[in-house]
Length: 87
Image (cartoon, rainbow, N blue to C red; front, top):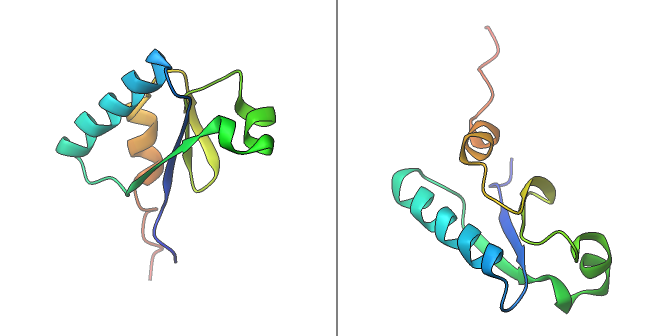
């Protein structure tokens, strides 16, 4: 199974984006998080059309985790490994 990927879609000069990036950095100091890729939503026409009005957007393997503000409990829940199947 490939390692999970976190992507933060953001925009230059966006205060909400900067706040979410700082919150993710603080969370990463307390919990093991996958590497974070920062992507300028305006750099890709498809991303801009899909998410341009809703930045910041945090994606886990391409799926939206949260928009506008970090939801740490939801992110950590999604990152938890599934329970082991009974033998």
